Amino acid sequence: MQLGDLGLFLLVMAALAIGYVLGRYDLFSSGRTIRKITGRAASQYLRGLNFILNDNPEAAVDTFAQVLEVNQESFETYLSLGILLRSRGEIGHAIKFHQNLLENHSLSEHQKYLVRLELGLDFQKAGVFDQAERIFEGLRQCEIPSIKTKSLEYLADIFRDERDWPKAIATSDELIKLAQDDANRSKWLHRQAHFYCELALEAKNFESTERVEQILNRARASDPQCPRVSLEWAKLKMELGDYAEAIKQFQKVPNQDPDFIPEILPELLECFRALGNPYELIDYLRFLQDRYPSSSLLISLAEQVKRFSGETAAVELLDQKLKTRPSLRVIGKFLDFQFSRKEKNDENQRAQQLVRELLELLVIHRSYYLCGSCGFSGNHLHWLCPSCKSWGTTKAVKGIEGE
Ligand SMILES: [Zn+2]
Image (cartoon, rainbow, N blue to C red):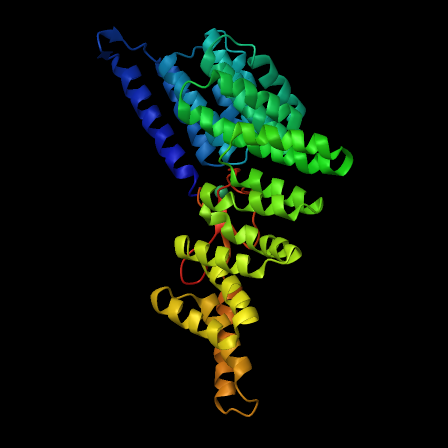
């Protein structure tokens, strides 16, 4: 059994044990009678579960299909068993299991909705998006708010995976209207801002600048604090040669989320260079470094200081900052500067070079980006985490080996 199944397995076992005991002894709870699971149903339960645990899902599905009556307690156990099959990768069997369950005449309308949601997820996991979409489209008409919301959430996931941004935006609009609390509303507004950003990137290829700007305005209206929206605005303005406006957009990012400062630096430097404002750039980098210190910022600042005030000033700056904030990348830059100041025959040079190479190895073999939501790591910024599918949670790693 995979580790991820363990929690679900324990849940199923607990539900089974409770269902079995309550069924056998016909106990009373909170003044109401728990419906008795007959001896035959109870033994079918255990047989079916035994088949799942012994990697015989086909026999398990057949066994569960023979159960004629499902009550509230056993229904929840059945839902967990279906999820267990799907999470173990037995998608075909999970589909059959849920289809069989839908044919069970003892199910209430509400229970049928819940099974159809699970069946939709089975098809989604199997990559049969049109079937999944058809099921969720049917359920979004449901008058039960929780079923309607769930089906819309799953539809938004499908449209995201299909990169159908207009549909993802329309679905998120509905979810924003249905949201019961601020946290949910904010979550969907933030996702919607990313959907608009993706749409804007596509529109750049075949639509007018006005249309792209209109889409980015909508992204900003959805989430005015989203750093990605500022970044996409800045890149668009750069492409149009409007460097002053691009700088204004880049400068919104530190206030929105300083963790994204390393993402704006190369292009921000390019904009300042294009406008010929080196001292203004140094002042701005100093301001940022004092407020939101990071390795990338300090290295950029030191490079600018070296360019305009000389190597000694740059080395002093790094030396001073390293005392309070050690960083492998900054030490590497410090050695680079020191290196270029030494004579070629300096006997310390080889030792310095070895240390420099060692640092490089240490930094190269570290992942530079980490998802704050699931821990996925890699060497590229992903706005949409490839693992947990969260938007904007992958950021540059902090600490001595990172920023
Ligand atoms: Zn993640």
